[in-house]
Image (cartoon, rainbow, N blue to C red; front, side):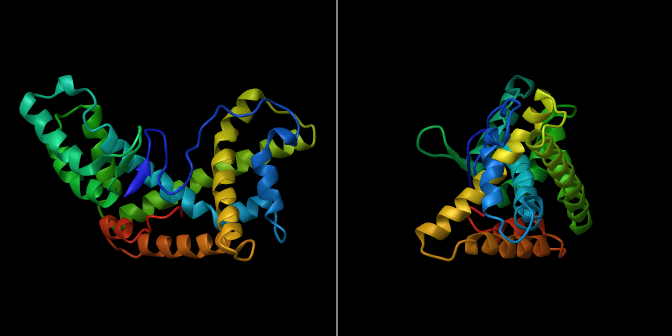
Length: 243
């Protein structure tokens, strides 16, 4: 199950906020925090080693959550029988919890994709969304190709963050738009790093042990994803905890 809100990611804090205005590194507390946690390597290599795979997993989970959460978007395009069928499917995928939160059963979303794509009318946004995801998760080679694409997206986002951070820290040229683009990415990664540091502290373990546990666990998850296992099996094996 993924605990989420409409804009939240499974496996970590939601990425929110418009980002800081241009200014010194004091306006980037997330990166300052990450820097304090990286005694033996640069902060961007630390993020690449420990948080890339978590970020990739959460991009995939985001897509699954979106398909489930928005399953009844544009209900007026559906005839009553089709709408009722999809509503019954959605009730098995999304479970509302206290307040405005909800949980999404990710393996069940994956298993429901063929039914959803065959039920939605052609040329609707819901069908395109479900069909795109079904094709990405269809078999091992398509899963590997999607993973490679997301690795490229991660590298570009990390390089952008590094460039903007260095410009701010050293008085180089940067624009508010560039800062605003990089800030949500920085905030979400800082949230994971802070969560891991606090977990180590509260459980009386060596500082950095939880970061290392995340690195190992996420590497095992990637190995399973790229092994040819089905997407259902890959997500069913994903722990429900914060990693």
